[in-house]
Structure formats: structure tokens, C-alpha cells
Amino acid sequence: MTPTPLASAASVSSPPSGSSSAENPNGVLGKDDFLKLMIAQLQAQNPLEPANGTEYVSELAQFTQVEQATNLATSSERTGAVQLIGHTVSYSDAAGVITTGKVQSVQTGPNGTTLTVEGVGGILQSSVVEVS
Image (tube, rainbow, N blue to C red):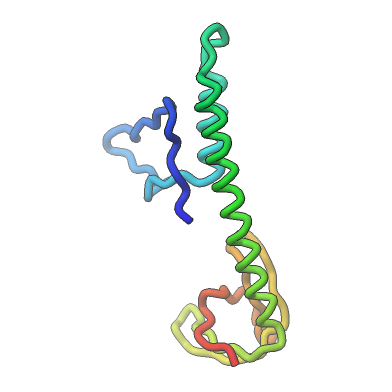
């Protein structure tokens, strides 16, 4: 699921000319960006003229949907990887060489879900080309 942009009054300025935005090259808001913008909105609002409560609730609902979709995708990825334990897989390594071995364990880290195959760790689940 692609994260949805904020539909409210928060504005995101483009980087100054001559600079690049390496932080968000595709211009897509993730759940952390979404939450940062929402907090910035709340901090910048005038306490005597608060924002429309309906807009706030709508943004909070959008944030919750993005977070739930992300959590579901992560959980599904882990479940699929765990089901590979004990199975023989063929995977493509960084050099493009196809290697075959039995999946021994699954790890979850900052790079996503990885497998340990025949003692070789850090194999991305997406590099698996065949399961037998």
C-alpha cells in the first residue's frame, strides 16, 4: 500500500534551488513523515483559533490506516519467511550467482526479513527464486 499524503493545511516546501532532497527522493510520505507533519501542525496552530477537529480526526485515521497496513505487510513477510525454515531454496546472491541450500533460520532487522541458508546469513527473502 502506498502511503497517502496529508490532506490538510500542512505545507511541505521544496528544497532550495541547487540542493537535492536525498531524504525523500520519491516525494512519498511514510508513517514517520506523516506523524512529524501532524505534530508540526499542532505546534504551529494558534491556541485561540484551533484547527478544525474533524480534520485532525481524519488525519489521525489516515495515520492509523498507514501504520496498520505497514504492520500487516511486515507480519505477512515474516510469516512467509518462517514457513521457509527447513525448505530448500535457490537464491540469487549479490553477484547474480544462484545458490541452493536449506533455510535454517529467519531474522528481522533494519533491512527487512532475511534468511540464513546453510550458514550464510543476511539473504533477503526477495532474492529467493525457487522453493522446493
